[in-house]
Image 1 (tube, one colour):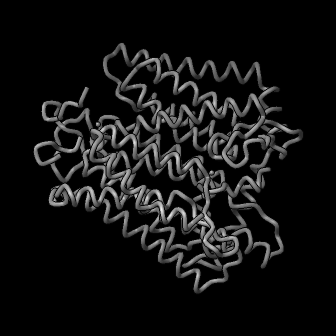
Image 2 (cartoon, rainbow, N blue to C red):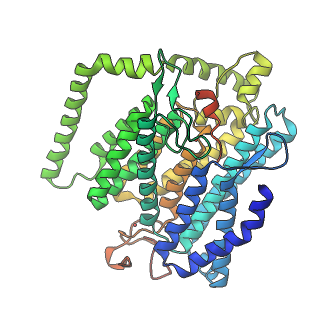
Length: 475
């Protein structure tokens, strides 16, 4: 299978080059992102010839896409325009160097530490490499002036398909995924068996994480378009989130919506009154639902669903004790569970916190590089979306909530989706812009804005039952 993919890389590259050269910018961006998302949700893994060592298809698609975009720029002599985007070059450099250093630390771990589970180690290497390749891809898309709105439309479409799949899963009690179409979506951790939608992620907690990541994008899209499709997409995502029965996903979305209500532009006094009315109505509805359906909700979300919060905090406490023994370089990527089995005789599950997992397995050095990337992306998007500051705040804070109470490190689709959105906001071209300098990715003056033309097998499944110089950068 791996040999076949390597053989078809030139064919894929030729097809991608044709798409970029023939299609308009909006169409080319949509095709490239759709192709990438298709590879991500396919969960196809390629055998490397070594036992239990596989590489997911996404890494080959990303490599081929990046190479195709680079060749296109060379053939079109557009590389000479790169020095004009000093701000984006700096951003790519910081993200690229940080992720490259993280990868170097992980490779060092492979030589210096005991790697108990090579498949998990390769999975994490593969994951971080894909995040790095995504950064390079979106930088090149920015050079080609692919707009952020095109990227967000693809995410909205992805969200709708994911929501529809989740509803069908709940109705049929089947996963309907490529390699496990007939598997049930039953969840066995509670007092009784419960159905939980899993979407494209393949795991119910991961599906809840993905819905929470989609929420700010769908809300922003609705605020810009105010169309029937945009409200339908948001409502479908809300229904999908409910069917996952992921409590931390509910909390994340509630926090995000509260931030939107409090910090979005107030506008006129009438709009302010409408917003205050919406806040009071939401609070009243929440109290009413709590009073009327408390027993049913408690039965559904805690008894049937299983109450696991207490174990998570016990697990976090133990993880910090382990960290003291492996402070600088960690246990090794993906090695927490086998380490606990080998040295402590504990059959633990994966750490239910992506950030804590990064700290324990990659040590302080690796975690520092990862945190630098996360904080930098947040600061850059916050500067670029000054007029809509609630959007980056809800996106990054909402993601921070869900990834630190679920084992998000093994929900690769959630990680890729978040970074696609974050990179798209940082490197994409804004179309609703106000003036800004060439080195600052902020809003542009409306008069200067150009007019727009009219995977990886989810490991947690086993545990549960994934301008040129005149045209400034602009959305």
